[in-house]
Length: 188
Image 1 (tube, helix red, strand yellow):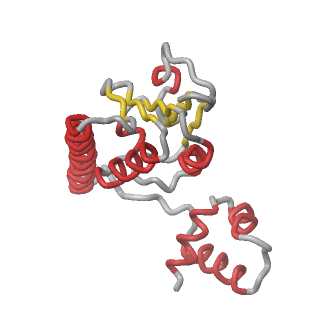
Image 2: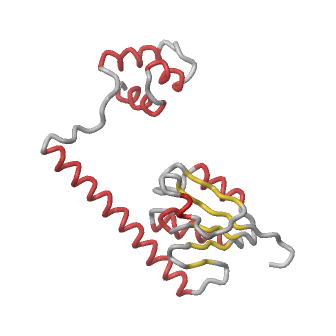
Image 3: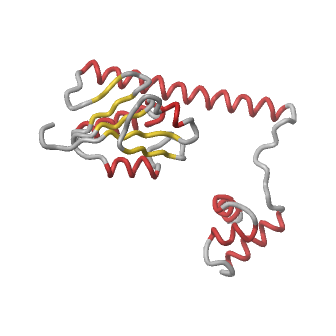
């Protein structure tokens, strides 16, 4: 595009090997998410959406790194393309631009459907494995760090306002902030 500076941006997932995802690709800026691609409510993903501008190219290792549901994939690609931003999926060897053809859009739908199907199959197998391991006594579920009396003390301390934040409460009890939320919710 004439008169518009462009840059290449990459989205990675740090749970994966980012070196492998970017091998042989030169980019100006990298956004690495620590969260799963299961939805678009990821800090770095949102930061990337706010950062990119017309004429940029977003490079993603694969569609499943961008979005896991077909709906999210199609919606976000469409939004970027309408803003004049190209999006390239390296593994699938496909790029979407404002000049994308109906065939490109069909490929997006098909590849996205396969990515979503693959994710659902993985989750189904995981559930089957947990059920089998549980029936054999090998899987007991999430291990609770706090004993029931400790969990009650945590809830009581929060109710009494002994700690300024849930993070401070978690640190006092040696658990994560997310665990604090679970224990507080369980006591409701």
